[in-house]
Image (cartoon, rainbow, N blue to C red; front, side):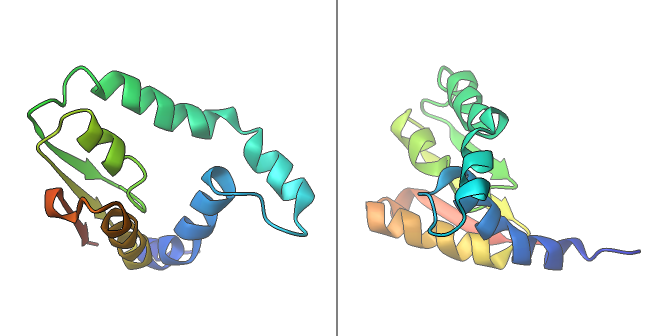
Length: 115
């Protein structure tokens, strides 16, 4: 079976991020528990912040596979001059742009859908 990677991520990425990092949903208690106990997913974000923290001040940061830009705000807060995120999923890039616009830091960010 051949999978179209772009279509796969267009359908999955936002639900995946919401399940792992978003607020609990109604009527899906067992799924919410499984998502919240998946420490490896939260570890990914936490360790990335820790590892990049000492190195991003004054830098232009590029993230490939940025999803909906969950790290962008933190990277800028650590002192990066700019952040550019690329993802295969256009829906994720659209959400990233909205998230950053709400925070008022869109002038320092760029998100592109490629793939």
